[in-house]
Length: 467
Image 1 (tube, rainbow, N blue to C red):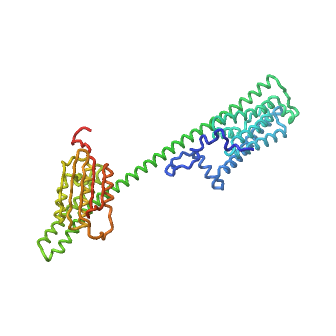
Image 2 (cartoon, rainbow, N blue to C red):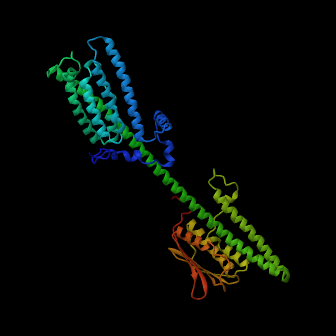
Image 3 (cartoon, rainbow, N blue to C red):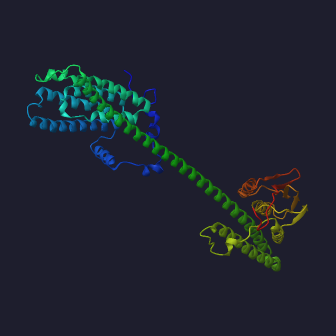
């Protein structure tokens, strides 16, 4: 016989995905759980019961024990009431056996909710047919089974199963109303036969069973809906947290890259100049002390400029911390095209011959594009000093209405550089790409090394203009 744990008409797949899927680790702590349920789970785990099947079996045994206790109390009350309402020993024993056996299917309620409810309803019909009308006992097993059907099955499937269960109990209601089964167990019982009164009694019993089953299934369905909703909320929260974490990681990576570019540009330019001037001073200290002094003064000036540049970078990084940069360095201006003359003058002071060529008036670039142009020239001059010391550098600026290009060209070194390549070209290309520009770097056929940067010219609002 085909099991009912996975039917094709929309069983618990309707809601179980969001209920049974593992919770994201960041959200397990906020998953709502009942305190009593957690204590019961913990207690069962201490005695070795850790699975749903084991917990269902333990719950079925607990329901059976509770049912026996309730039956014992009710039987004592009935027998103490007199002879007219007394049950025969055989009738009492059969009621107890049926009530206990009725709890056994509850051990499979989550794996086979449909079969569990039908089996419980069959035994409920037998109980109703045997129990005296005045006994007033309704077992707990039908309530639990109907609740499970509502919680585990889709609404349409649950309605069909509950209807089938009520149909089974209808036979027991008819037998209870006519007293046919009780007449076999109690010689003094009256067999009423089919009449208006028996029909009314049967309908009353049947309606009671219908209301109990429908209410239990409805509660189970509502609980399933709540669990599904909570699961969806947690899933969306997990997606939001993951998205925020991804954005944070991307922002951190971008900031680290930006910091690396800034530090590399500053260090490569100024420290290269320091190394070149220190080497010149070392050679001239005995031959030409005056020129050696000039080189030392240049080293001191480059050292101050390096410190100022590093303070500017640190100040920029510290901005945004409660609006306090700690010093004026946080507001230091960012270099751009307007600062190229000073950069070229510093390179010439360091011993690099720089020839400038310009076509067209330099436009006002956007801030990021402006600093990109400056850093590219700065890095190119530093590379020329480092890899081809003493060679002349040509800086060509071509400005147009839509684009501006900067070309830095110097002679190739006689031998391959002894030091490992750095990240200068990578940083320059990244800067250019960020502002929609393009950077090309490499040797030419005429024995020179050329770096060419093209940047788009975008309109820049004047300070204080409306955006």
